Image (tube, rainbow, N blue to C red; front, side):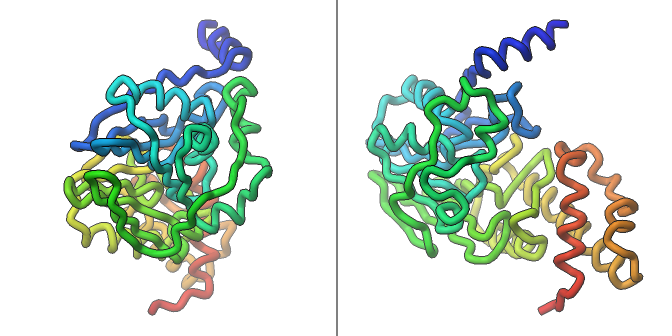
Length: 301
């Protein structure tokens, strides 16, 4: 009964984010989301977002699922240091990560993102997230123009810190993905290149791209891994994602070699080793179908 009353309250009055930052390295703070699908009951708060604190300003990496989320995150960060927000970086095109952009734009921030995001979500278009969360939580949220496009790897000095941008121009999680690396403290903000605790979705990416991106990440000198979803900041996400990607690749190729059709494969593939990972019931069967299609005419390079 209490759960029903709480749900009714949230539908009528909104989720109320009550965000609390976690310091994960010297200059990086994390807001950690739930490992579940977006809903009215969580206000879309199922994503990790990050704030980089320089000596004079903030850089926000992923602005979250709504204007009100971004506003609440800012309120929490002002308690740590009341600094201007200089830049906002969107790691990829999925709307759970960047629908807070217009809040920060109102404060004068410059928005960095990919061409894939602009193509998928032109100014004034609708975002699926806004049909999932309550009208109260979605209030004031709108899709705005991107100021600067990330098209390749580059480095940028922001006050006292160096930020290295790693741009993937092949399909990983989406057609374009971006990571932000702080070499001074060996912290990698990976966006949805890395998940922990829950499985990824490959609907806009690829298994091969995912494995290739993990090779890139593992070659880097990283102490703290800031993931797009999940709480772990060590190498847990790398191990979990590689295991899942390899299982998709191996099982799909085996099924294709043995003449098993896609529907049978999706129904019978044994992924019990991953049963404790969040979002299996929501995303896994689709991932099986995408993996099968990817490898049906695949030639190993």
